[in-house]
Length: 252
Length: 147
Image 1 (tube, rainbow over the protein chains, first blue to last red):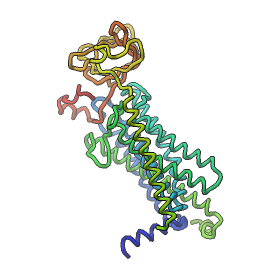
Image 2 (image 1 turned 30 degrees about the vertical axis):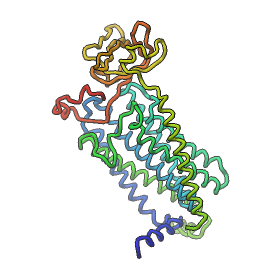
Image 3 (image 1 turned 90 degrees about the vertical axis):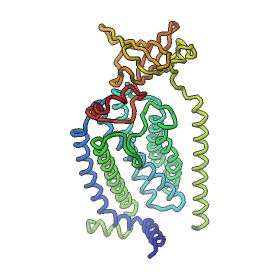
Image 4 (image 1 turned 90 degrees about the horizontal axis):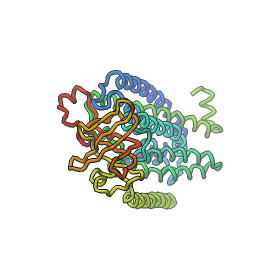
């Protein structure tokens, strides 16, 4: 089987909620275990063993929560945008399930990023909140998550709900590069990025390795959380089909 | 791809492009109006308006910090290291990163006599983190840089 034809097969399989449900059981467990181990090890390492910063002392450790929350929240939004495009063009049912499943965690992590940023900003910058490019664009991200959630609650018709939220999710992705480059385009109080997936981190290994573990752990947690939600959604939506009744009867 | 999907894909791409373009135009327009802080030269030269809330920034001049022993009051000099400097008076808790040589943004009012009465003092820090021992090895070469 050639590469393109195997991609096509996967594409068609992804269109089937039943296939996704049956495949994803082990993924939930795998991501769950990875999240527990990584976040556990990362938290102890970051809070107990990583050295303090020469200027900020221990308050820089807030970074170990702030950076993973902000990074994963933006990644969740990007995935939602891609799901939005897939739904808008191909009307794939699973994409709508994915959008619905991304919203709660995305909202919580964005709120956590803003809150931990405030807690960090108070002792170091001297302010909880400053209207600079980075903080405002992150606030917009929170409003996008909340807005799409509210939109979905407000529309009764399932098809319209799916298309409307897909459109907003897709167009809102414009905000993601704005968040990323805000610290470079404008003079902001927020410092430029210390940790990206593509560049050498601006700190020694004993500081960035725990951060890397925390970021990976947060991604694993997001995988666990979102796939579990998608599975639940699939069961609810397909509850009248034969295969769901059968799966429920056998406990699988 | 069937024609209906193709049309929807083009519509989606068009929408994305149109909204990106609008956003970019908006940001370019707003950039001209972003109220940045006044550097020390502008404060000294009288470019900065007096008796009205503004932001000013500069580096804390070494040896200029005078604390009032009886209160939280503090006075210090902000400089651009090029001859322009002005005195700031502030009463309250300074951020942890406030220190001599540090880049600082103050919010408040410039008085007619040239004294800056600050309501808020903000410290900027950079994206580099380092343990104290390594910093000693580095010989304090970063400290005092515009961070």
